[in-house]
Image (cartoon, rainbow, N blue to C red; front, side, top):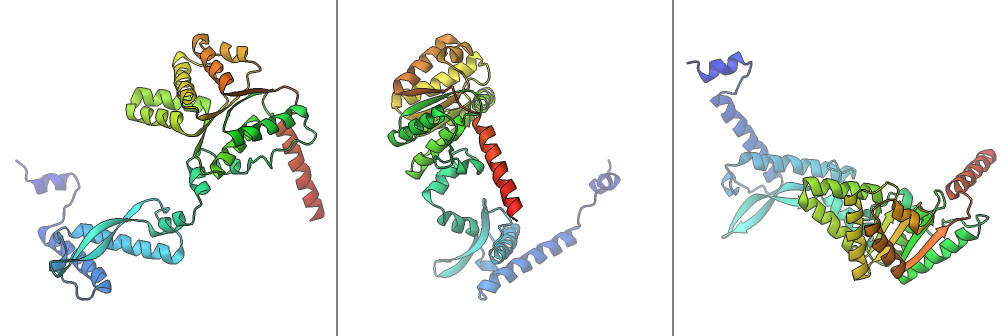
Length: 323
């Protein structure tokens, strides 16, 4: 029978000898002690808790150096999101003791300390940085028709009262902008809000339901319990039975607890929206919507996105001409 060395040699592998392993372990101990003694010169190897686990201390020593370089350059090498291990000194029965512990990234701690409540809520809202600017002030109404002005006024009242609102109508009328503007006002008051594109949300729920029950339950709980929920593009996809059922569970739970819900849809009428799925499920959903808030259909309006895009292009051309 071939020896282990012969087999590994035949495979092209080479393991360090016992002497090399001892040499590597000694080099690791020397590096660890050099790191510890740079802070605490009196430290001895015997003061290390679980000192035989030299490589845990070695990792902590090296991560400590990385953290130091981050702090000097103010550029988090770990993106400021993870915990790092470091070496700490304690007293135990009158003797110093050194051990490895985890601590949050110090740059992340400093960054979190500087955030406002709104900043933290915005990070959890599902909104993009672009949507941060979709405020009521940024929603243009000049020259866009009475329906646009009416929609903005009702949306502002909705944000103030915490009621429900269903924004219906053709694409490009700024429905999503108004829904986001309501969210931003809610978060400015210190309440959590969540934005979900409905087709993506239903795909996530279906995937979680099939593959990971815990993921599904956590998503569903958040959708039912968040103080303000925006469901964008309801009815954009023809709904399966499962999709209709998920939507009913969310709307019904929010209806019973009177939690603010904002919905946008391209359906021109209630009847059209019902026709996109199971009537026995979508009809009671719409009934709850009607009871809790306004159904506002923006029928007569120039395409909002096209108009705003044209205005931006004109402004850019003027600026370039001046320059």
